[in-house]
Length: 287
Image (cartoon, rainbow, N blue to C red):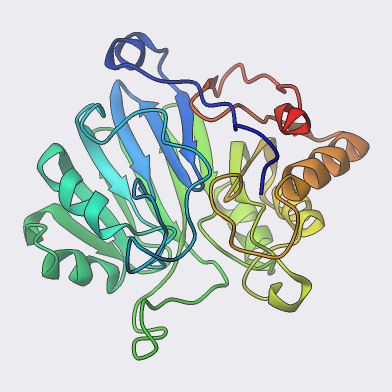
């Protein structure tokens, strides 16, 4: 657990409206708000207090989101990587349904949303390498090495995916959850290079590296993809592994600097302009 309070930069609708196009905001864990082509897009929305099937037990948030679901602007799409509880929050999906045009999901995940009450015409499900263009932004579901399921009885009943997001001259890679595999090189060769890679670094263990990358593997994945800037996600919000709270950020930050890789580590809620990112200070060291 963090020793102190995690810094969070609160966001307002006015700030979002006036933000430059191509601005990203980490809202926590793997939830990222993106402003592309003048519209807003959101990945893996988790706003509940716990990443759990119940709200009285399970991993509890270390920090509040920098804004509430009610404060979010209208969303052109919500992009989902898979159906695990720390990436797919049923209450958040239900609350977002009225203010979201489209939910983009891997195969099978969209059927779950429909069962939760999301209108079917708002759901688009893609297989790996399938793509869709929305308002000039292209989304491609790309391979990852993970698994799915929300109960002991539905393991791997739905697909999991990473995503390539292309807007004008920007290319963004969003990993979702994945172990390190040769698919990163294939994605980089086919769809890279990328202006920024949003790669998981957190909730790992050497026993789990088939499905969650170690920090050195995250760095290699970034290089395989042909990434310019690296933004680590999947950390700092929930305690989902046995490593120290600050270990993922500290280790990857150190490895990236040693390798000469540009890494950006914004405070939760801090705007990050993809065309002019900043390698922020290691804020977690003060915790």
